Length: 116
Image 1 (spheres, rainbow, N blue to C red):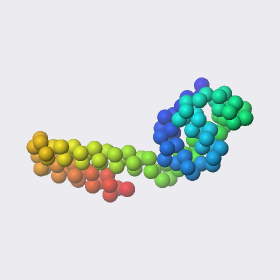
Image 2 (cartoon, one colour):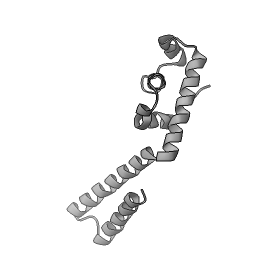
Image 3 (tube, rainbow, N blue to C red):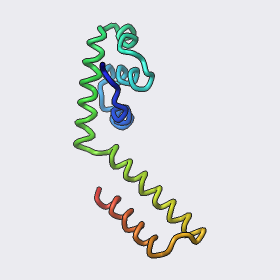
Image 4 (cartoon, helix red, strand yellow):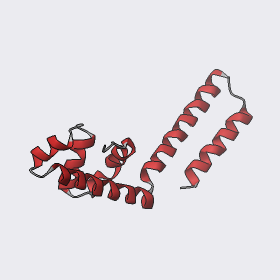
C-alpha cells in the first residue's frame, strides 16, 4: 500500500512553488485535497501508476530541497523559539520565572537562532 507521509505534505507547503505545475497540482490533489490515485488519474488523464510516479518524483524533489536548504526544519526551530519567548514573557509578567531561568532560556533561544 502506498502510504502518505504527512511530513511531505508539510514540505509541499514550503517548496511546492519550486515544482512544475503538473507535479504540484497532482501532489496538492493527493496531499491537500486527499484524493485517491484513481481520482487524480481520472482528473488529469493519466494512469493510476502515472499519478503514483509523479507523486514519488515530487516527493524526492521535496526531500532533496529540504535536505539542502532546511527551510521547514528552520521554521520549526523558530516556532519553538517563539514559544520559549512567550513562556519567558508570561513567567516574567506573573513572577513565576526566576531571572536565572529566563537567562538560560534566552541563551537557548540564541543558540536556535544563531546555529542557522
